[in-house]
Amino acid sequence: MAAVHGQVGEVGEDGGVPFPFRHAVDALRGARVRPQVRIEEVAAPRRLASYAYALEASVLADGEELADGRVVLLHEPQGHEAWSGTFRLVTLARADLEPEMAGDPLLPEVSWSWLTGALAAHGAGHGEPSGTVSRASSHFFGGLGDRPDETRIELRASWTPQERPGGLIDATAHLAAWCDLLCACAGLPPAEDTPARGTAGVVPLPKRRT
Image (cartoon, rainbow, N blue to C red; front, side, top):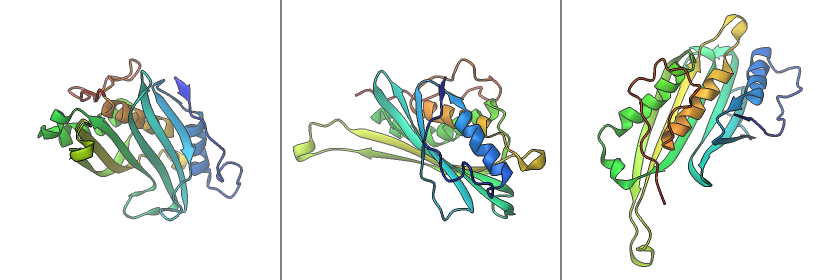
C-alpha cells in the first residue's frame, strides 16, 4: 500500500476549522491506498461549501495510466438540506475502454455498481447517492485516420457519508472505496485485502490496451 502525499493545505493548522472536518482530512492524509494508485492533494473548489478538501489520483499498471479521477470532501458545519448531513463527497472517475465495450447496454448499470459495491465492501455507510455514467467514442479521419478509435467512460457521483457520534465520518473507508472504483474503471481486479461483502457479481470491464 502507498501513503497519500501532498502539500499541507489551509486546513492543516487552523484552529478555527471544525474538528470533524480536520479529523476527516487528517484521516485522508494518513490513509494508505492500493499500490497501483498514485494520489495527491490538489486545490479544492471554494464555492461548493464552507470547507472543502480535494484529491486527484491516477491508476498505473506497467507504466500505463489506465484511469484517473478526483474526489472532493465538502463540509457544512450546520448541515445542508440537500445532503441530509454535514458532509458530502463528490467524485469524478474516468477511463479509456476497448471500443466494443461502448455498445454494451449494461455498461451504465455495471459502472454504477462499481461505486455502490466498493462502498459496501469497505463498510462505508452513506445516503443520498446520485450520479451519472457517460460514455463517448471518438473516430479519427483524414490526417488522423491512422489513430485507433477511442472509447471513454466517465462516472460522476456524490453521496453523504454516514456520521458517527460527534459528527465524525470514516473518511478512510470512503477513500478506499473510491480507489477501488478507479481500479475497477481501469480494469483491475478487487484488492486481495478488500472485504468481500457487497461485491458479488461486480466485475471490472477489460482495460484498454494501446
